Length: 499
Image 1: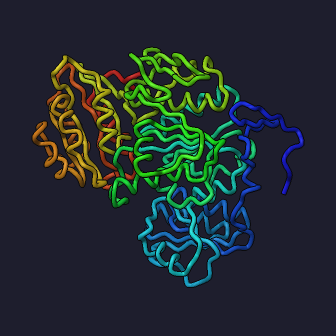
Image 2: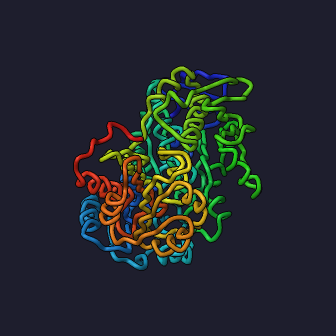
Image 3: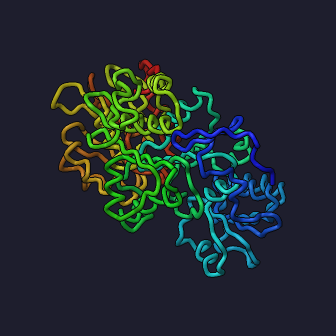
């Protein structure tokens, strides 16, 4: 193994250490010094051939492992992907219920494979060590990690952090949940200062040595209760983000989430910065549209939300978290403010698709849980105080969430709800006391019905509060279908930027 450069400049502030073209934190070493699994000539099983599983296969093959990949599904797309892996010398079995009868030194599981799956259980029965694709990528990567977890806002916050750092000459790549697989960025990490990681609880479940230098927890609203037995189990899975941190690492945590961690006696070993748009006891809080820090070495106003493209309380918290990351990584506030003010959310996140006949059509397909729906309703423009003006399109695959949570808000903001997908009957039972509910069979039917009923000043909002997998391959495709349906109505002016 090569050694660290002899030229190392140390900063006393925040434990930062910088070398030529490299930033690191005191106590952190490049990943080649922390690899926990020797892979050369090892027999390794990869379970699951989604994007993360395929990236794990390729990384293992480059590391000299003898790779076998198994996937319970067998589709035309998977057959094509399997062919490209076989061309690399990787053995692939599709439609596999059980792993091959051979010895394995290690198993790597993609995030979609649940612990109760027969493939997973068989590895446990054979006493084969099991890690996630996330852990594999971390062990092989060669730069610091900034990890962002929480129920909602991960991709927006990751994008903000990437922008703040990139505009201040830090080399970064965003990986993880809903982004590039971490294993696919390992080779590139040699030339990076930071990997910015979107961390889902699924990816954190099987971490062993994962230790981000800066860990951000945005919020902890109920989600994925079709995978976790209780809300506390979901919180514990997210809290693994901090499990291996040490005293000189950083934990940037929404204050409400921090209280949840404390109620379950979940430790935070690193230095903590709290933030909240609603709790003024936080280290960073909001005061009449201003983001303000009460931290002794960084006190005063940080950012004016009126000067930002992002809107809403939840985006205020995304901005707070990103500013806190920039602060601990020594980015000047003036430079961060300029980058934050000009940042625009990506598609499918409160995206104004068109305005047709005075009716706005907003694509919020990324809202895959009830709290995200709540945020979307609160952020939607109001026509006149006290009068509902939203035609809500919702529904999809049920994640066993409590839809009654937004009932009162629906009565205040929603004229009618058009419900589709697996969860539509459950939604109607929860919401019919608060707003008129209509069951539809497709997203196209929902858009057509909403357009028929909407009047000038109304908003047609796609904010499903469910995952997309009952009818669409992902939330992006669901959003694209919504946009296509809206544009087929005709006569509308497309929005220049998201709402």
